Image 1 (tube, rainbow, N blue to C red):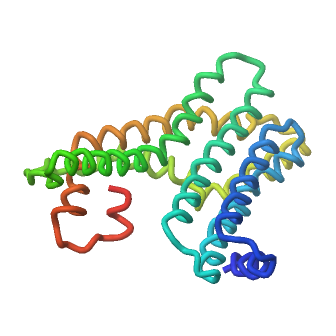
Image 2 (image 1 turned 90 degrees about the horizontal axis):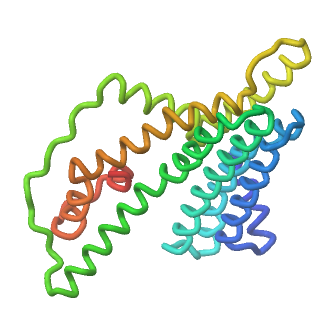
Length: 252
């Protein structure tokens, strides 16, 4: 609901939905810069970047609809901003952790954390890219139909799979991170005021991101290939009259 205020503001300023999307990406990048600071106040400001980004992520669509400019180009820019925000904020967290960790040991975790942040969106986006390429190649060859096969059923998630999925979602998905990160930053300020020694929350997030979060996204990528999720999506989109189940079919 707070996004409606920004919709009103940007519409009256004559801005397009795409312009609002780019502003949301700039906000996330600035938040990443603040999160890389050694100043607790700037870290706190940076921790709120997901909140403002998320509000603007809703506002861009509202502006586009009011201006009657909704379309695929707007969705494209919107999703690009998701990647930018995720990578910018995770990079800021890692750089901030590296600045205070005083050691080389954190670098592998940080690199894997950033890779995981990019992979979170790219394994779905590149899945649809593969589907479109396959369709185009087959159409050039005079056959755009994928032969229907019996696809392997995905196994039920184990307790281990579920635990890394849920913990990754809570710590790194914008819906939860926008509330958790400010709480972490405030707690860190409080602990420093009362002289209680505790690891910087950015170090904890970097280690978790480079292990559990990275492992989760690699595992999801492998499962999409193993259980022929792309082939199923292709067949349902081009060979079937069945209505899409949204948003589930977007994300395999």
